[in-house]
Length: 230
Image 1 (cartoon, rainbow, N blue to C red):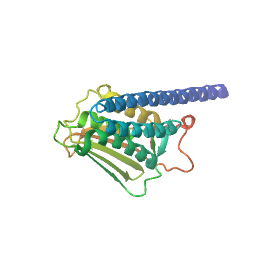
Image 2 (cartoon, rainbow, N blue to C red):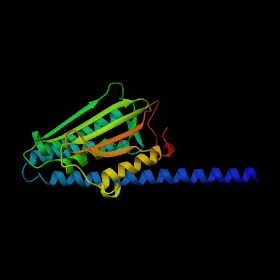
Image 3 (cartoon, rainbow, N blue to C red):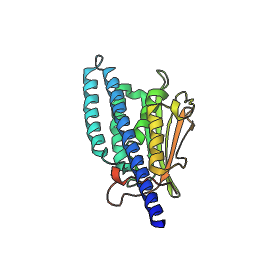
């Protein structure tokens, strides 16, 4: 009876792990088309005004999609890889906003090999660009900060827009709500993501995840950790 009970527990745990992995893969699949749609929308908004600028944006999008497809086989990548993808996205946005977009990244030394969820920062910056940019001619300011706090890594993305009033995560839009759900799937139910008002006056998104370094390779989908954060 004990062995039978233990076998049932193991089967239940295995099913729960498989479900969590399937949910993570589904969330990641939702995120990529959402990003592509918004990027193409951005390019279409300038293609009739400045063909050369639209051409540069398409080239940047092509490279960004190539990087994103490479990373899509893993739930986690190194922070260095994540920042490369973010840089490509920001260049597309610079082609649209020009000097009006003021983007700053501050990363504490020694964190390049830390593992982070794939496409963690890009949706947060995209949300800041789309919803946190004040009306022209005021500059759109976005700051990304990454630092270590004890056994955790803290990410902050802040803008100088009007802020965001949401009724739970259901009102936060695809990018923010999807990111929060992915964090719970990877790191458990411990609070990992908060929304607030930053010193720039707009929305401040803060994320805290366990510090884990890249020993050999980032987690593949079948290796995703579904335990609770400690």
